[in-house]
Length: 142
Image 1 (tube, rainbow, N blue to C red):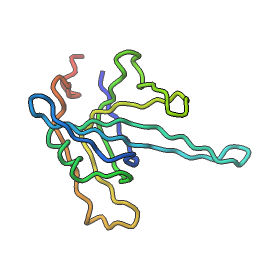
Image 2 (cartoon, rainbow, N blue to C red):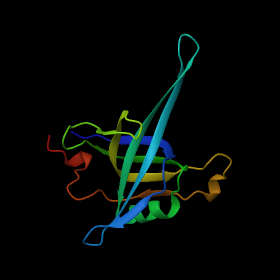
Image 3 (tube, rainbow, N blue to C red):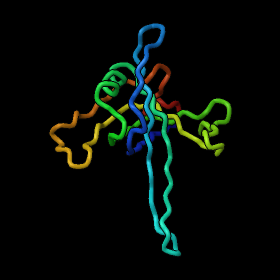
């Protein structure tokens, strides 16, 4: 089976880049996606989902260089389930409320313009090869 996730949202914090023991760059950042609606009684509802994004190699370096907290971004990649639960990573916030976040390994990142920012000042698409062991859609054995 194969899946692809596309998310468009805002960075929740500045990216953090580090290196694996063999020197491979890896950058982590969080993206918030929200949806709003009006209930039947006229009240407003809102739902925010947090995504923990990991970028590798050259894509990691580019994301670390250009992305900052609050910047809009489009991320395309594959979702990684929590190895213990098979679902999202569940944790308890400082307020004692259970929360969840979803893990995504980025394959493509598009830096979107902020409100009022001309599109000419926005870097283009950054694409990266998938991490080792990733199967392309045409390599699926069925």
